Length: 173
Image (cartoon, rainbow, N blue to C red; front, side):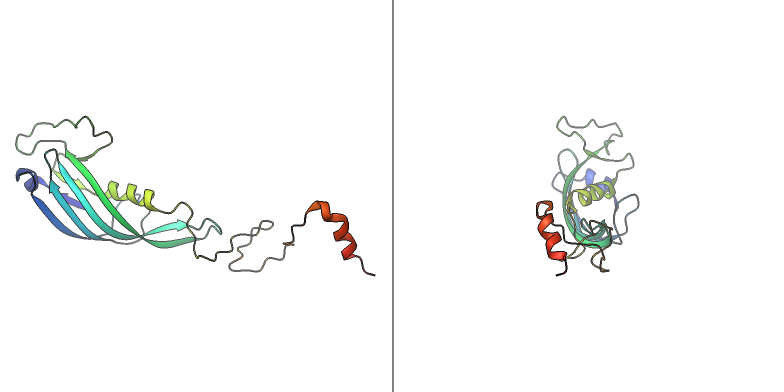
């Protein structure tokens, strides 16, 4: 997911490139398998604007039963990258004033999408993912996964104010 953008930076503002993305990212991203989609690079007056529509799979833990599962994710990426070095002069290029936390094109004019992809995956992953819509979760008493086993705990959580009447019901006549 690295692109050499030296030639694109030498071309006039507005020049563009399109790429098919089909790659397995390196690094600590929570991805499972390949990243596939379209990447568009546009030369702007300050750097390269990246627009991408990608699909991948992410490993997450169910918020009810804590089981790990893999879910598909579709990401829309739009981010501007700024060069470290001017491709024509070889001099360093300062970041624009309004570009706090911006992504940079390295000294070899390589644009790397790995970190952008990792951040998009983190922000687009559901906060409370479910392994299945009908996930029953864990037993409150013993911690058994109610999706795969039957719990033998008493599930009747009675109101303690009704305790005396419950005791009468349990007495045999």
